[in-house]
Image (cartoon, rainbow, N blue to C red; front, top):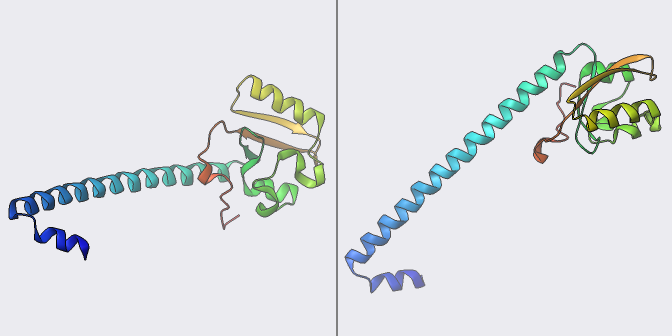
Length: 152
């Protein structure tokens, strides 16, 4: 109500100038929101595409962040190792299966992969005699780490 009283003392020219300024700010804000929403849609589309690739891989697949925490796994991984997304996503790889994954060979493999900055590696691990593909992810937006797909 105080602003209305102040406006009573402004000239018509000042009010038109203020209105024009507010409309300009409103337009800029709308453009900013549109760009932000568009960027989020592109990121979401890329995430879905990456998830579809993960799901089509025949081998058991894990995607790890740089802290060796699991970002994603495919259905074949869950089936082969008899685990669920809830007990897998966000876990430190060596903590899986009551620390059954704390294997010197796996530690060495991951250490070498990180040192060589390899993005993926395949190795036969002594866990249920299965082949496991591990994808190392150097950067993943924090808001997408740990997303759990309902279909898994």
